Length: 296
Length: 133
Image (cartoon, rainbow over all chains, first blue to last red; front, side, top):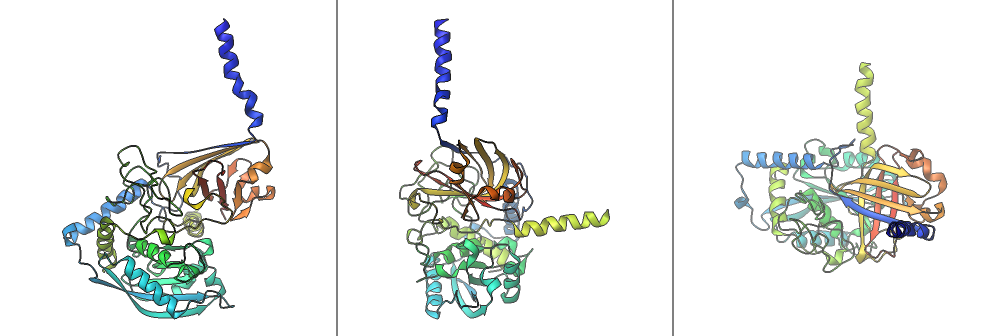
């Protein structure tokens, strides 16, 4: 009886302290349950959809009789770039020729271990308040791209504007067939080299978004489980890294625990000064996807 | 009836095309996040379950990185909760509830959020709501 009373009192003790806890929180995660409460699957594939896309891609590769050993040599694939600078009526968003050229240097340096080189074909400047403030998925973005886009699936259309609070966004290679006029990358004009978006002002938002344009996912895609970013030589990462958190290791259990977080990878969210590499596996994936979907 | 069948999916597609996060977007840490940048991380996605009471708010997020995440915040005063809430980057106010809720504890369909959280638990997590429309 005495022990029962003690147990009862002990279990009630925490309740006495609840009022003192002005605020507390619990934050955790669990395995994706694929409940499919979805309205916009094309922008956000589920596990099942991502696997279906991968299977479709592999089927196309087989059809084209391409294998990993067909990886093209470094600097053997030239991508034409159409640069579209968008400003507002007060000329906010202006980017100098020197900064555009610097962005091209950053791109070519970042992809120097891959088959891809980037060739600036033309630059145009549009003064349009609506387009300057166009955000992801907006009607203004649609109008901007419909008016300005040039070339076909193999041509990189690179737009700069105020990016509506983001640093940038891009379309995947597999998106082109269903929505060709939307294809391309959009980046915050201040993220170009010499811009003011510190610590994101060395041009690597362009590098990052072009990575998506070539078919790469974020390094933290899928968290610590599943197929992740579909690249075997990028360690799994629980969530996006920011700053430059050396020795960050967010996946420490399970089959995907090996390796520190890939914080130096262009497809993470770390500072421009922290990101400087793509893996060989990413190079292979970009090569294969661009060949399959962009006829590059 | 045929017109409704034709119009409804078109409306859903239109609404969805204007109210999505990007799986390819690159985020920058907002100025209101005080956690040191090396210790920050984020989840961005769509709220799939949501509950709010007088002492607790919880949500489950289907993230753009294809994970499912949960956050639960306990509080004794709404003013304390509001320190952790933002609406499109602006501090949350009591009058903002209808923007994200159909009614108390009923989240609007297709509500998007970004959660900023810190490795150092001295910094509380922050929820930045994007309204559904």
